[in-house]
Length: 613
Ligand code: ADP
Ligand code: MG
Ligand code: ZN
Image (cartoon, rainbow, N blue to C red; front, top):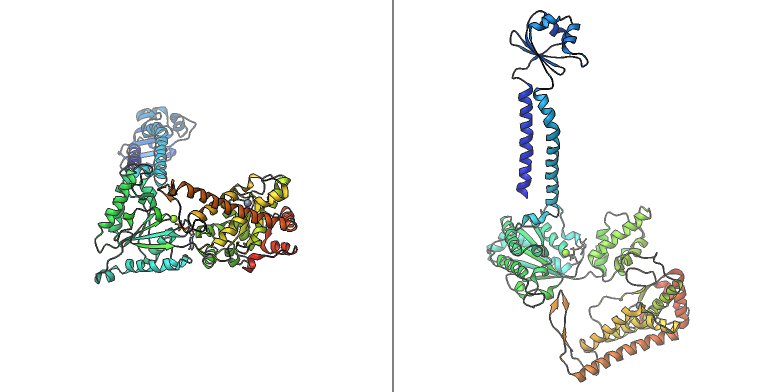
């Protein structure tokens, strides 16, 4: 591809040069001729100084008896004899000189024919060349088989530093060591310390793995090669491995350097699970990465950083000493981190002075860094589309759901009846949540339909915890049935709107019994082994228990579900007046914030158990 581009440039260049030479040779002699007026020409003819004269269109060229050349120019309308006659040259005098009329001949003639042909051809060549160049920089990767397809970020350009990465304190501390290695590799090799070869960044999507890897390069000031593992395998067999080879080759020449392999699970998935057939290409690529890493000399200061959000499926071979033996976990941001990330991303944006990022952060648990940066952007868009110069707090709050569930679909036509049912459904969830001590508090109740969800109750845990208690699970299940119970109680009928609630509750009950050992009857034992993964999903659960135990498991799950349903039903029936009031408020306002919701139900003597917790 590159050579084709070059060839075209050469063709264009040589054509241009030829054309210019051609034109020069034909139109001029070596010595510049003198320029005469017609008057002077006439005088020279009369005085017999002219040897010959050639007329080509309106151009007159003369050779004098002294062998000097001269040129002149006549008016358009008249012929040459006519013109000269006006200057007093008689036909006789004209006869004496060697006089030729060349109609449209010589260089002019040829250029006249060639130019209309050459010019479009030239233009087309230039156009083709340009198109190929575009294609090459875009999707034309297919033309560079076997060549490295890594993007190289030089340390000075697009610099990302640890300052730009919020939170992730432990991860940054561990990577600081890597930065040291890259900066002063001599210091470490001098005392015989081995430079680490591979660092594996593990974390959920959007937690900043890619960003952190670039920050390491930025801090250390070394070249950073970025390649996504899926790019290794996207093409044809054998190419992945050769790309790896090329990549390491180049990086070693530029050492110290960082090779960043993003989404390494695309090639580093555990081999031999038999699912989806043996993927030769993937294995070859993976093997090549391992070979290259093993082949590093002791003082090669090329560090491979890889990122994955599926460390569980990675091939053990990758994790062996001397390979990706350093592992850095990137946690989801907690409240403080989220506030910090929001602040980082709204730097330089005009914020209203009332904007409180703490509140926004409180409303966004479970948001990864990428979601938060998206949130800030959505808020800015919202402000701009309302022709405001500053971003308000409500822009941020209104963008949360958009990021969470896709763009709001306020315009979706729903009937009054549907709206009422949804209002009761959501009111049911919220009411049950408020009534149970172990449920998460309700922050907001809304019936605005967004994305897939018809309406929802946003409840957020008071503190983010990694451990869940049995009591919390039981409360969660009851809250799930809040919507279903409310529909039953009010309309004596149920809708399809509860299907995902039911699914949720069932999943919780199942895990509670079969995985967490929370069933009193069955005791602390796990039931069922999951066998194998396919595309990151568990497939096939092996039944490792008897039929009779299976029946007990079913009974236990059913028991949990029925009790949860009963709890929900009792709460909504007992507090029917509060339920009606919330539903009515929702129909009217569509959204209730936490304070509105709590003060509304308090009016009915409702005791908010969650807050007492
Ligand atoms: P990953 O590679 O883990 O999926 P990225 O590094 O691509 O995530 O993160 C996506 C974007 O999210 C980043 O470009 C950055 O804008 C933002 N982001 C993620 N984590 C953080 C963080 N801790 N601090 C600041 N911004 C972050
Ligand atoms: Mg990434
Ligand atoms: Zn529901």
